[in-house]
Image (cartoon, rainbow, N blue to C red; front, side):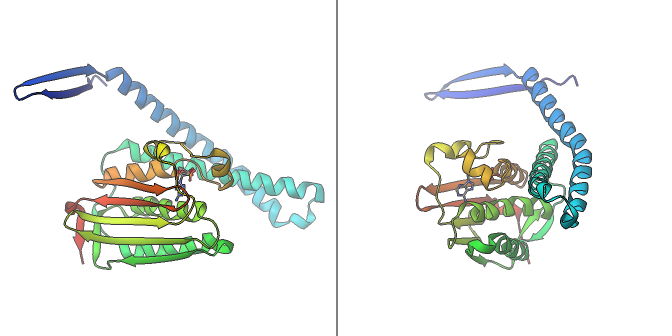
Length: 262
Ligand code: ADP
């Protein structure tokens, strides 16, 4: 690995003068690569033992009436925490995979409307006793070039977040459309909203607005980082608009060159 990484900043002064600053960031780049490899390896190594633990817990819970009553509650809690850990490892591995390459694993046209229909029905099941009204307005002929799996991860993270953070009875609207600027997917909710000071940091790994509230919702803090990476790989970007007390709108913008039509 004998590549050199340079960071170049060019600033323009007046009409004819420029200032160019060149920084050697090779070491920084190497450290960042070591961090990524470490996280990916640890996540991978932890997955097998955790699968074994979760498997035994599941077997015990299938016969929970034969278990000493004193152990029933702890077993349920262990099972719940094992599930959280599996969710976290899956998200870490997905993020590591997304960071390892620049382009999506596939570049075929993806039928976005059926994908959103299926995410909507999963979200309705997740909403269960919170009884949200989840509506979908989608251009059925508008398709996007890319990886269906990656787009599913990104879009479902946005819709499931709306379900997680919006209180019972709330409204969630999913909109998929295009105009001269490109194709757009927005997920709008009338939940608690997010203060402006948090917005620039929301897509960082593990960043959460209110960690006590966020941990009770069972999230990993990696969802929006995954969304950001998937969008980057599809020449897209994420826009977040939010008003505390009123709700939030997360919009994914894609360039026209990514559009495919039926
Ligand atoms: P998490 O797994 O905690 O949901 P995310 O990366 O998906 O992690 O989101 C980061 C944080 O952004 C969340 O912890 C939450 O505080 C905030 N957030 C995300 N979506 C919404 C939303 N629809 N309404 C309010 N807050 C949200």
